[in-house]
Picture 1 (cartoon, one colour):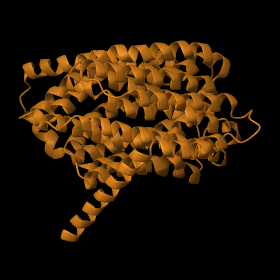
Picture 2 (tube, one colour):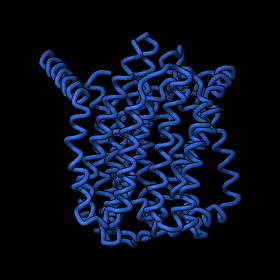
Picture 3 (spheres, one colour):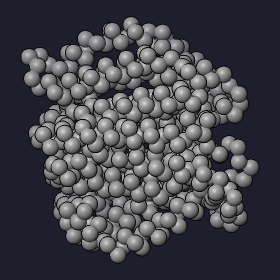
Picture 4 (tube, one colour):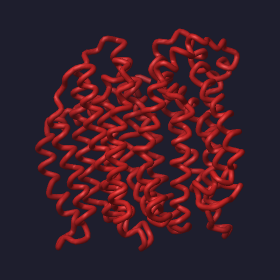
Length: 478
């Protein structure tokens, strides 16, 4: 993938984060913390249903795309099993809709259930259609599909203000659903040339079995990973309050700015690395990418530590603790991104069953820490537990890859990620008690990090200049 393609894919996460920075304060000011917490439960529910229903076949589609002779048949073989499970599960859920609504939102409200069910269907369809754009490297179309729902959600919130509509969870839920349907419509239009042939393609049972054999282990690892991600929300829902859950949700939304790095990288990394493997490229290139990514991760930690206090100027007074919590909240996207590089050996060797044990180890750490910290410290305890669990996840994932594939340098990775997590936890615990501003500590570390990663920063700068030069030459040629 060339620079133009990477920039096209990067446009979506960057623009989505920009809209998010506007949307989060608007939602925080317009709706109660309890309603913000309920919206977090909806998002956790959607992620759970998606991980369960896709049966790991979304990853099978990505893995086999470049090696498949009939991509329409591949799409159908990966889509149909999960869609059939969605239909069966949907009818089962309808029979228990009052209980589902009470469990999720603390209220028996049919509207909540039906919108949630419709959102599950929309999310499932959008997942597979997005993979088509991703694997075809249609970065601009993919980015627009990400930006449109964010923009629409913000427009709807603006209309709620201007028209002085009732500001309750039903309104917030409808706004979210409308934005979800918008992205499905855009995906359907942009991928019509690919999904239409898939409708009439022959469903090869042997191919379905082969793809399920790859994907089945990912069902369990996916559910375990959902548990890892959702533990904090579930713990706050059951052991604390919707208000604390709302604070946690706003914190993770602010931390979504750091997720730009994760979104851009994970979108382009899997197709690139599998293409490298298919072409027989020297795998030592992956080690260089890991070092450069570690440098960027450390830089993002520093930037967040230095400037997180700006959250006080964006959010209501009830969210003043967010500036401390956000340091732990960015651990999840940053260490996940690093692990995507260091765990590549698991995918290459097709030893996906290892992802189950890796994720279960991190999940157990998160559950135990959440049971201890959340009742005592609410949202603060949740972000600390999550940060430590993701450090466990990163180390376990990296070690598993080194075991099944090849040995590669890891000490530096572990030293810097451990220090970053430790300092983030210290910021949560001591940030408001220090006799000086906590941001000064992070600022003082900037020259140290710059010196330690001077070689990687020079490599990144040189690569950026070269890429921009090639892009400029391409434009002149045209």
